[in-house]
Image 1 (cartoon, rainbow, N blue to C red):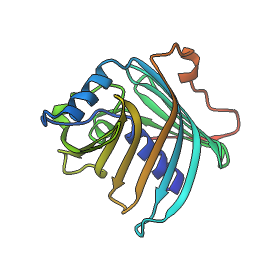
Image 2: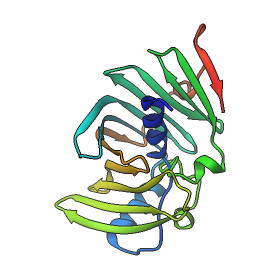
Image 3: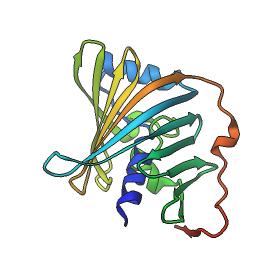
Image 4: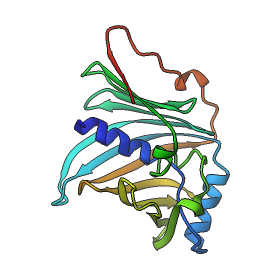
Length: 208
């Protein structure tokens, strides 16, 4: 699996429901945020760190969410790439490689944190939630998968004044992914065509 597609799958994973019964304020704030989020747009900065904790890749782009089950990551720098989910499928498009990979958004993806914000699975059934502390207006919640076959070790979600601010994912390859959100718009009207995807002519398409 290429570095991009591993990163892409992680990015998808950073969009799925999460958690368990730790009834603390940060946990309740996360549940409230998810319950009241129907759509969302934000700029993002994604940083991959190696086992030594050093940045190995930094990407920038725009994120779109429409519940239920629709999201789009537009990677703009340093390379143009897209991840689009709708209709039970996820498209991973690498413009430089001229390659599209299509995955079915089934139970195998649902067992990861895929679609955190989509609300497609019950939080308490899939994850254990632990409060990680509060720093000023920032609250941190750690999510541990109950599925032993999960592709990640943990996910940490940061909320600022009750809204999504950042995420950190530790995968089973020893890689850490951090995403920072800015210019967040909560429940905006989003053009539904943003979640449509048609492979450009001449690109290779692989279905799994």
